[in-house]
Image 1 (cartoon, rainbow, N blue to C red):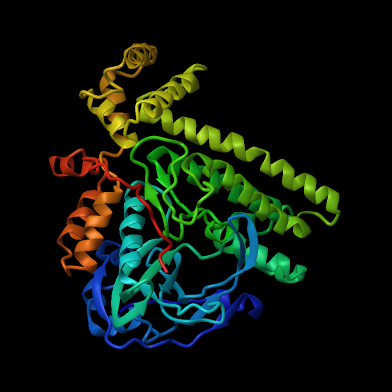
Image 2 (cartoon, rainbow, N blue to C red):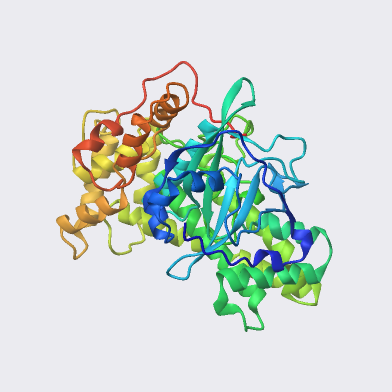
Length: 482
């Protein structure tokens, strides 16, 4: 199957992982293969559909060169520190692509590990397909993310509130190094273990710092920059992660762990979908600040490496953390300018954007469709577009566009590249999952994935996927996929 494993994580101290044995499942069956990703990995997609590959995706067999292990880490979960680890995941190894890229290949839902904390280590089909859909939607939007190579059913049922079909997801990531991995190392109080982890992260993700005496400060700075950019991209498309614990923040800057995530329909910074986020800690509008809080925990973990003088180490950490807000603001403003067809910078831009968002909240406008209709210049009947406030804003916006050298056509083209016509709307995702998991019909899932694969196409096929859900009596809720 052309796997090309070359594993480096096992060279870290053994405290960072546990070698695990595969937990065979009864009768695995392939239900989803990401053929485009398979080709990018240099794998033969026809072979990946064969039974030998299915046995690998199910964890029944370990491919040549694989070293199955579960990673140890810690994390602040809803603000409370706890020791964690891969309780239901197994890292098969690090695959080297034909382009020389090193990527983790992990099985999610593969069975109990030493970090399972009483869980069964398994996963249900619905949540695994959900991660497949959302991660591929994020990739198509140009947002750094882990990706899904395959989903197999296990032929076994798992017990949750009811009996559910079991499944295993094959996840591909730049790495699974998390802020929580560094918190784990720091909590052990062994500076050499911490140093070995930091050096490993640098060698894997930031090799340009490897020989620099200030490499640990540079590591902190680079992670801050990547996360600021990532969160800005989330905010620009209305994505809500739902569980921004420190163990769900990667050193690589990829979005990871699609549990109770969702895309916002009606614009409201207070939007929360996760059933367990009862206080709104991870609400849409809180995500930038939560990222800053998580990065502060990362900086705390690195303190012993930043400088031998504790006070100087704190000063260096604070200096880097202070830059987060400016980096995020720059990235977010640049993205918002693009969404409105603006090429240059003026002082009033933030006020212009803030006014639009304020009106969208006041009139309960759909976030994605508002920008889509502005892009198309199709201001259909709605409370927002019919208001005198919008008319005044629209004139102000048109005047702003008129003060730049680029033409109206240039602005419309920029807007189309920046505003997705479609997102993975929650009701569409639920329809696809219901068809696949209850009715055994994958046609809706296939069509949804096709539409989401090019969200900026503005094609006729996408029109029906722009429609909003029928209003319900209860708010939409998402759940951690266990």
